[in-house]
Amino acid sequence: MKNTRFLLSSIGQKLLLATSGTIMFLLFLVPHMGGNVLFLFGKDIFNSYAHHLHKLVPIVIGIEVLMLVSISVHMIMAARTTWANRKAASSRHSQKGSKERSLAARLMPWSGIMIFAFIVIHLANFKFYEKSKTMLDGHEVYDVYGMVLSRFQGDLWYVGVYLFFMVAVGLHLSHALQSALQTYGVYVPRTGSKIKAASMWIATGMASTFAIIPIIAYLN
Image (tube, rainbow, N blue to C red):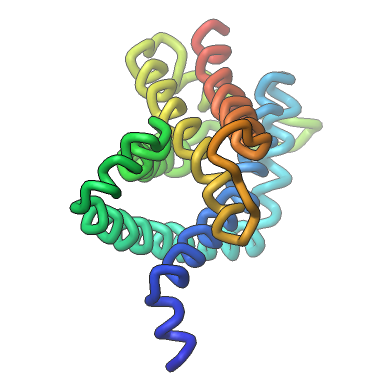
């Protein structure tokens, strides 16, 4: 009962928000980025990565279930936190404080919604997209490399939409990383913070890494 009350408190909700976000960052976003980078090294390496990943189906399914739970918790806690913040912003002091927040912080709800929409579109266009097969070291494997190429080649509009979503990812991450550390008790000063700077550079680097894939595929 006490644990339930704590989790429903303001601090508890922020802790759930930070923890669910951290799980998605460490178990999905970072590994996914690492796998995507292999696209830059050519067809065989990328298809080999996808083939070996397919062999780890039980582990992958377990992570996907954990991601589904994390996304659900994250969205619910984000909605509750946003609602609470808007109620608090009714005072003049809170309104002044909200103006001092960064653009990324003010756009967190919207960038979060965009990222959720992107996940749905991404799954529809890649995970559930029909894949042809190709030969790799004498074995027939799914041609994931060819699927990525075919999805982006000749479709500048889709590349533009993908890049637009990556801007949302960068903005969301730049605030989320520092915010999560604050939730866990790390002091982050308002100005001159190395943590804020590191969060911005990590977010920019990750978003740029994801963004370069459709660009390379389109130009290939």
